[in-house]
Image (cartoon, rainbow, N blue to C red):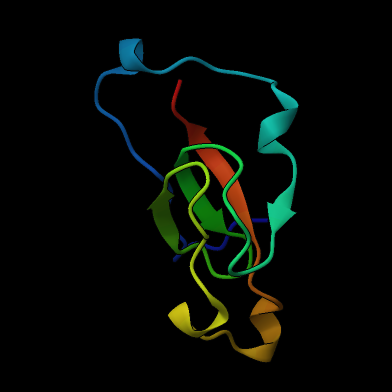
Length: 82
């Protein structure tokens, strides 16, 4: 569930994006894991977004901190690049 203060990735020109049910968007990865796909990843606890290239590590645990209410840091692909 998204909080009112949480931001989402934005776009202006919808013709540049395509909706997808590809399973690559399903898993969430722990900090420092090698990104399996290039794109925008969103922290599932706090909503922080980062850009990561496939094969590069996702941000480490020290990238940002969470409160106990936000739970663990976990990165999920929200916008993938071709």
